[in-house]
Length: 271
Image 1 (cartoon, rainbow, N blue to C red):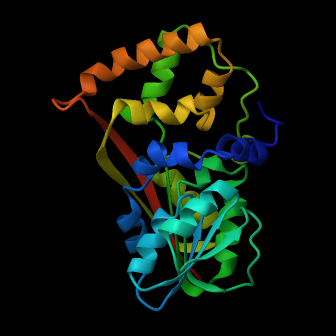
Image 2: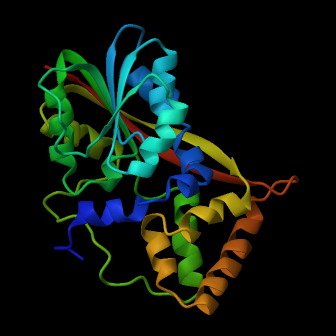
């Protein structure tokens, strides 16, 4: 539903859920980290900003390259996790599109699967551009549309269980949305005032325990988590049965799931 505070809704989905996120979606979102840092040209001695750090996965990897890292997240429970996993990073509670840093403070800024969760993606990118020095880099990842099999799974399970998603789920205003394609991301980066924008697709197979993958939505994470939370126990059980049925074809001999997925990786320079 347009008109609901998109950013406030998104933050509510993560509140107090760092542990469940780390068990489920966190492992998925960690995969593009090396490519993200390469796209931002992160190296030793640089000042790097990691926005939406979550449990600190990208911040820790940037520290491992010898960078001086500041990691930002709006969710306190995520910062607790980041403090343990990215010791040495400066941790700040904040959220796009307003960051508490002066202009041109950093050599590079990265945002791993953050643009999916902000109400004004163009404004978020403009803020990243503001805090990066001329000649520095901004790099982002986000989920594509049409969705790969992994991302389609949840919607398919809910539909197969006969559940209609609530009409009041927030969505971006048409003027703020953009195509979740390589061309769409390149255009968004350019519209935010960044130069030499490029976007590529990173594809991989996410291997996970079926219980771990179920744990994220079961804990209320993301839009599908909200849908599940609003159902009666019998309906949630029905969704779980459909989840088990639909994931059966992706199970390997050891019982783990092998789910094909992909992400868009966009990067650009600050003029």
